[in-house]
Length: 438
Image 1: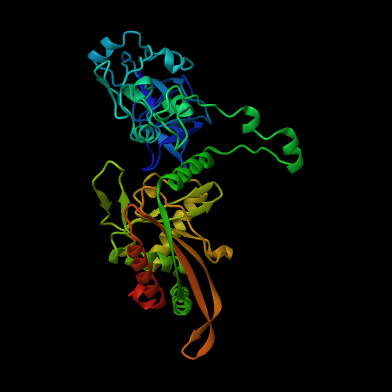
Image 2: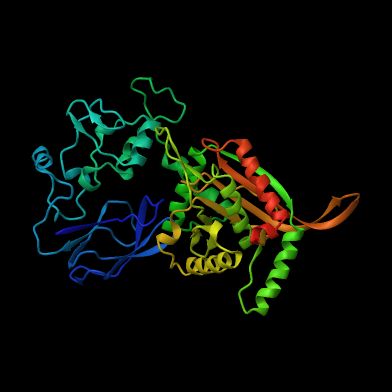
């Protein structure tokens, strides 16, 4: 019996939802068969079978959200069942563990006796038992931040690994940030249901309607909320005279139309300009690892993510090696990625490996805004619209196109002066656009 687990389909994915099961219990499954569609934080992706057999059971129903590594189905390959990650020592230590073929509805807590509380730390050495507690990086981070004792937790991930959902009970009891953790026997009072939910009178006054959130929207909310809470954002805004950029684009498109080639947009030119600016300022093309690391990652490839407000939610497809492509190539690739995003056909490879993101709301008439960093990247550029304004040129007041953009940067790895220098270079490229296409 093979246990099929929730796969990691993107570099930022931590959990996914079952969108559609394409194989039902009793169906024959061959290697390469489409097994299930999984909705992630970025798109809905198809997942193929890597083993052949007969699908025995769905462990996760359609629409349910589970963490990476959690079992989602059982595939009968005709071989004896083996507990994933189990070793003889582990089997001897946990004789009451449930067999792999146990009903999916059985609670995880019944699979093995509860671990007695010990003085184990967040990274996992249980002093009373002498065994190491295995936990995901996210769980260890939550444990450090919320002073959780993971020795009280029985992991339900592969091989007994502690995953995010296993910590819900401890997080519910954790003191609020800033509370005195040394207070003994502190009682945490959970908000009452009446306080958590609007009263009927309030709903009636506002004529409210409860609309379910899609799994993608829930994941987006969680990831961006975590980014805003954990990354020390700072924002730097600059403005450029975009008159020459607009003229260049007009002339360039006239020539492209004559040659029967697709037009380019202002955003295509900005992708190229940003890529060149990142090449000059590699410290902006970087990622913070974690608080325990003594290193940061500086990326030698410039892979620019383009934020797309598709009908299925916010997604960020990635253009790889943007600094090595022409504006026409960038425009063609960007259009293809946007089309795939709207059709929910983006692959994991097309949404991973980004080192910097551009979010452009100029087409909606937005002059200026700030954006939330897309982890694990270190910065994101928020671009406003290009509009004609009265500006002083020499001794005259003339109408020229102006553009504003704001860099959101991770202050843990990017200083204010570095961000300002990056924007200075970007402004120079925009105001001298022939250097962008040279």
